[in-house]
Image (tube, rainbow, N blue to C red; front, side, top):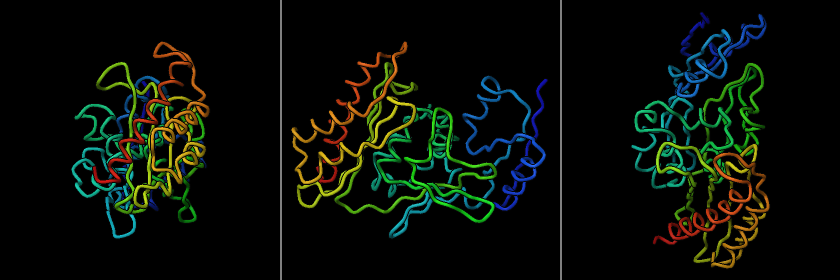
Length: 291
């Protein structure tokens, strides 16, 4: 029988000490925030003995704050709690749409967007949505903390930029202006509880009807979610008409690096991501216009 140890520290320093002690002794550890991925991995993907470090008792990881300038979502905040925060939902409807797609209602009572981010699946719904929102990772380190843009956090399939002895405290976002709105769309073969064949997160900022800033991110069509700068460039200075949306969609198709599998061919994924880009941008535009 595989043996697992369990620890539930109550401070960031205690977590860092545990990580450091186990690293020095060569004993593996795994962080547990929501636990919806960890529990599955313990049973199937990786059954090697390790110490599970539960970070749900930390004050920092349980922060959900919407301030006058900044927003903080702690790594232990479940999706269900985010959905109940009316102000956050109004400010970042696209991010909340993505979070609402992760698992069933029961799963969302535990699942966290930060856990989804750390799991680093190419099809993770929250990742392109976080990238589009301009989210920044707040990482606890032995020397304090460091920040890293979400688009630089995932480094490969199931891999992230956390160094040995580090863990994710939460993500930070800027409070958007009323003229800035986001959206997230994905395509799946089934209507519920499935992973994306392609996904697109977008954010647009308007001055009147003119787009003055934009971010477009695509998921499930490469090893990691990608920020597509060329798509944003096609939008800035336009009124987000069909021609500019078409150019942005084509930029997403060009940036995509999909594979073919039983869920869809590479050509199909590339076509779908362009369609989703156009549709998501239309949703974000209409939201920014108050429509």
